[in-house]
Structure formats: structure tokens, C-alpha cells
Image (cartoon, rainbow, N blue to C red):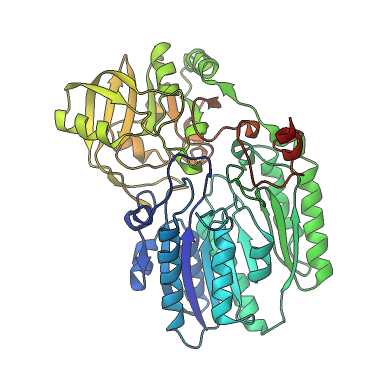
Length: 505
């Protein structure tokens, strides 16, 4: 059968400092740049992305793949109207010339907000439905942090969501989505697993608490496969993306079954299991000073680096990757054998690269995104390594990703090292440090601008992992965010006040 394949990914933090313009999608960085037609197949080949897994699965089932467009940009504030219209328009333009389609597969995120639409995915699905009609099956793979909306559920025949965080199963999820599409195409109109059930949970989950390598998420996601089968073709749980100030932000459950009863029962069972863990989702975070002090003491044992997650400036959640609060604390406490990365500062990277390895250069490092009350860490830095930022990742999350981060330098201040890049990328792969001449496993303290994805490649070498609260636009405590669009009844933190109560106070 003939399947159209497209992708348009963005995770939108509406509190972040910068918007996603068209160039952010066109240039790429951590993920491939905007690709179209046969270029899509080449760009995604061998990369741990849902569309890559879906394409491979489609071919293994004997289907013909018709590539449209695929694009992704680093999480940030809203996608500009120009970027959204150009990329969505490109997908629709290429779709309209195809004939004899049997199905559509979409690689979306599920938490895209644009300058004009709270639900970017729902709007894209609406436009697709307007063109292909209600009968053609459309199946979508979504990120674990999708804010699943009623419109997405209504307009798609299947929403299939990652089951791991770190997202090591992205390609696998694409393959699962394609298998569901295969079932729907073979069942014919209004047959097969088309019965849907959708539930929204009444509280927001902090990003760091959704990690499936720890509890309660580990056991919760482990139950999903047990509840599938017996008439349930697909069951998913989304933790939601809380920094998106939209009405439907938050965790949800979606199920697809051969009968309404099968879908309903599976959704109810997973909903109840998640709701019962509300208090366990609260998590634990340390102020930056306490986290560094503990890491200094703990790392003295010499049984592997202590890893600090600089979660509130995570580029993977809309942070700019340029705050220096945690770096300043490492320097202040003279943390031994410590390295931080990746710090986004193109001007400093260029200046240091021009000075050359071994030079000392005066830099106003970081803090250029305008976070209130935050200033650059101005000092004389030693340039220890200069690279071009081009390398291929090898860890479980970014596996196969061909990084193009521009001039990249390793700087040193008071014995503390920092990897500075010219493009934003979440620090979730050890190759990011090896490219800069650093073996992370040989350091006593490794500080990462990431929330959870780093665990896939760094947790195996860590003696301990700590989540640190340093300045950034992605606060773990949602009570620090000024929501305006969130539904009034949802609790801002597990076991915490509702949006209505908090806003009223």
C-alpha cells in the first residue's frame, strides 16, 4: 500500500526567551535540518527518530513510502506564524500531488504552540482532514511529553506515544505507529481498532519526575504492555509538557480498541494507576549551592562522576542553554575535576576559537538571553580545546544524530571546565564532551544542561545523579510560572493547589 510520511516537531515552552523561526527548522542542529522528498529519507536514515523507524517498518511490511517533509527545531518559545505556515504548507502542497494513498503517518511532538494556535498538531491534522476526508487512516507518533488535546484524538485514527524517558525508543515508537496504521489500512473504513478512549489527569508532572529509569514512571510505563492485547491495539500515557501555557497542558491517557468497551477499560485502568501515584510524582530537587557542595563531598570517593542536571536551563525544554548560575557555583566552591556543558554562547565560542588553544581571553560568558537578574560570568578564561562542532553521537538517545554545533571550545576557569557551543543542544551524549577533548567518565563532577535525557548515556558512568535548581526559564516548581490559559481545575504540582486557587491567591 502507499503511505505518505511527514514530520513536524517542536516542543514549545511558552515561558522561554526566544521563538522558533523558520531558520531554526531549516538549519537543524541536534536533529537533521528541514528535509523534503527523497532528501527526507536520506536525512533520517540510521537516526533514532520516529519517522526513521516508521519508514523502516513500512518497507519491511512491503509498503511504498511517499516522503513529504520533515522538520524539527530545538525547544523554545512559540513557533512563529511564518515558520508554521511555510512548513505546514509545504507538507500539504506535496500531499496534494499524490494519488492513490492508503494511509498517512505523521511524526509529531504533541506540544507545539504557535503564534496563532495553542494546538499546532491539532491544527495541522485539521488541515490534513480537510484535504483527504474522514476515511483515510492517519496515525501519529507523539513524544512522551505531548499535551494531547481532544482535537488530536478526534482527527487522528491513532496516537502512539513514546514509553521511555530518556527517549531511547523513538524509532521503535515510529515502528509501533506504523504497525497500527497497517492494521487500519487492512481493516478498511470504519473497521479495525478505531474505537478511542481519552482521559486527562488533574495535575501537572514536573519534567524530572517523568523519567522511566526511576519511580513512579518506571513501573507505570511497564504496565502499558500488560494492558494491551485482548482487543486493545494501542495504549499510551503522556506525561505532558507543563511549560506550555495552553488549556490542555498536562498528562493524559489514550487507548484504541476493537470495541468501545476494550478501549474504555484499558484507558481507565492506566488512568487509575497514574492517578494513584500523584504524590510520588512530586520529585526532589536541590538548590545549586547545596547540590555542588554535596557533589564535591560525594565525588571524593572516586567511584565515578557525580552528575548534576541543570534542569531549569535545559535546551530540551525551551531553555536557552546560556545561564551560568551553576557554573558560577562550581567556580565559587572550587569544585575539583568538574566540567559543565553545553553552554550556548556563539560570540564567546568565536572569540575563544580565534584566540586559539592555550590562549587566555577575557569573556563575558553566557547569560545573553535576558533572564531577569542574571548576568554573564565575566573572567579571563584559558582556551583548552577548539573544535568545529561536527560529530556523530553514539549514546542511546541521540544515536546516529549528526551534530553540527558550529565552533565549539573547551574553556577553563579556576580549574573548572566548560564546553561552549555556537548552536543550542541538550547535553545528552558523551560525544559532545569527547569532541571537546573531555572524557566525562574521568571527571569527578559533570554538570549537564539537561533534565532527563542525559541519563541514557551518563547514568551508567555516574556514582550518583542530582537535580540542581539554578537560574533558567524552565522552573521545576510550576507555581513559579504565570499561567494564563491553563484550565482552572488542574493542580499545578502533584498534590498542590489548582490553577484557579493559585491565581486567586
